[in-house]
Image 1 (cartoon, rainbow, N blue to C red):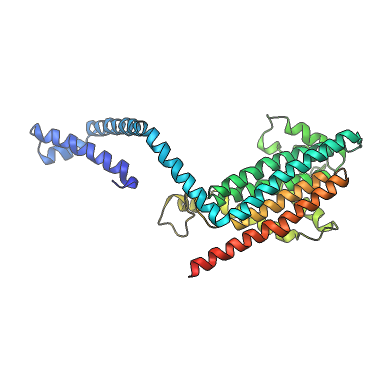
Image 2 (cartoon, rainbow, N blue to C red):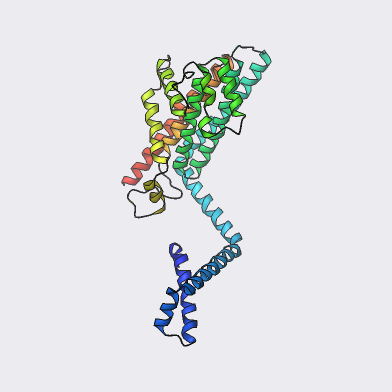
Length: 337
């Protein structure tokens, strides 16, 4: 039986069996049709549907252990397939992740041991907080890419971009803004429209023009700060482009939802695992994670932070990006043969 027609076929089977029983009791075809059009017939149909639901659920439970073995085997097979195509780049992502943790642990030990006191210590704590969240998100990006879900990984890139925007904004603000951010982060009762209320302490937002503050406003300031900085390695317009694309791709819409659930709705996005499209979320997420890490390590400059930033920059620029570009090139060549 075609899985896509499972519910229809099962329900039709139950209706046919009930119709046969009516036929055996002397009902004519017209009487059977009239019965199913009646209120009583609709009640019977609902009872049959409930019977079908119960039966199918019990059937799933009966084969649960067998399905688990089969699904795990399919998952491992696909993960091995992804690894054969993108394994080098994915391993450099794992290396970037683990090295970030090692470097930050050494950095924290040095900063604490040196008893560095700063009038912006809340800023440093906020950057630490944001980097910890970014580290978790980056680990999830790796997991999604390893399992063939680049769309999901790109959703997480959007989160990394937002964390970078907040970190960049806070890094340019006085200590009281960072403290307000930390207090807000610990307040789980904040509603969505008050999520960035802490930013109102900034002179940039402390007037009546801004009744509510959103991430787009904070990101706009972060992009301006980037453009003004001496670091010209990343274009503000480039960041806007790579951020806008996942917003268009991921945000729910009627067409997007239908595209994910129907084979006949234009250029649909495949539901399930795919082995293409890993390059953009992998590279952009890695670069954004590096940017957040750099902000964190640069708060209290020292030899450890300088060497750490250098190592991470080398991993991304000389190893990770070329590995994904080379894998993409091989895949395109194989497809064209």
